Amino acid sequence: LCPPGVLPLCCRLPAWDRATRPPPSPLQPPGLPLAPCRSFSNNKIQVELDESSGVAMMKFKSPPVNSLSLEFLTEFSISLEKLENNRACRGVIITSAVPKIFSSGLDITEMCGKSLEHYTEFWRAVQEMWLRLYGSNMVTVAAVNGSSPAGGCLVALSCDYRIMAENPKFSIGLNEAQLGIVAPFWFKDTFVNVVGHRIAERSLQLGSLHPAPEALRLGLVDELVPEEKLMEKAAAVMAQWLALPDHARQLTKTMMRKAVLDRLVAHREEDIKNFISFISKESIQKSLRMYMEMLKKRKS
Ligand code: CO8
Image 1 (cartoon, rainbow, N blue to C red):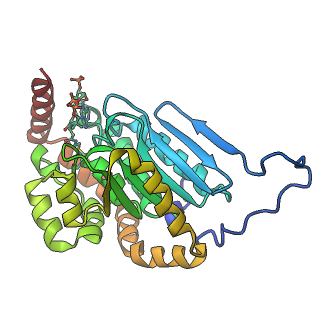
Image 2: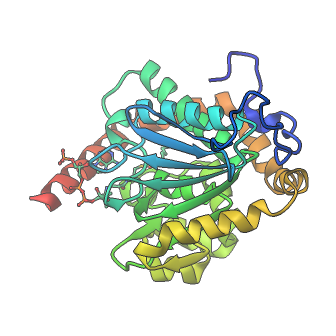
Image 3: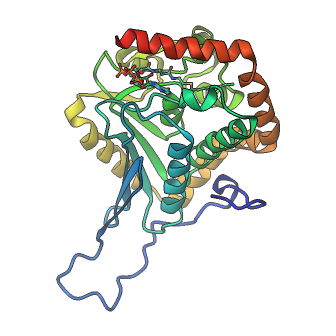
């Protein structure tokens, strides 16, 4: 992750013309594929980069629900940084290896009964993940193959394009209000930038989780496809986006997203303080404990 004093990737100049590949190595023996598939995997995320297409597949694999724990968020940011720094990578498809769940959002246990130091570290990791993903120079496509509440929805919203499996049992939305907590301003900004102010205002106040067909109608996702066609569709969308020159697309993306990114960068420490003072209130802790109990009861 960024050492102190180093600006996050989103604040650096775009990596121009990733499309311009380095020439094949003269040492490459004839007949061997020029562009191998490179993969790296850590505990919670698996990444495979196909160097011939420049597309990486990132799969969340943290059962039971891909909750965004401190460890998950750290791995996520590191994986994004590795891909961002690899000139062979131009786009990433983000999906889940856990059936029926894209991501259950922030790991609630990280926000319950922990020390102030822990809350600080955790919230910085949430910010870091978002700054990297929302500010990424790569084309980012979310293949949402399961439910995606709160932080899971934020991950999808931060991508350039969202395709969701056509299953009305899968829902997506920023449901923080249902937990008695409030989505931070940069969650809200990301949401507004996708669906517009009115829809975001209503959805955020009600803490709505929208079933897939409704999410499509609201513009929260761009397309629904049958589950078995999801990856094929994601690859086709990616190819369409990668057909453009990287520099023009990247500059346009920066133009569209910079104000929102800059706002968090400028208020990062204040945002951490706000999070800590909010989350450590006894009334908020109580709401979160009750919510976790409700999840457990619902299960039994
Ligand atoms: N964090 C931690 N544990 C979780 C979470 C979570 N977000 N979600 C589920 N779990 C746990 C459950 O408690 C359960 O644990 P156990 O096995 O020990 O009982 C296990 O994961 C499996 O959960 P379910 O049995 O509920 O699994 P299902 O497949 O039936 O349902 C769902 C999966 C739909 C994802 C369901 O678990 C669910 O709705 N989870 C809650 C999702 C949620 O509301 N997330 C919001 C998190 S808050 C957030 O992301 C943004 C916060 C912004 C902070 C602002 C503060 C200022």
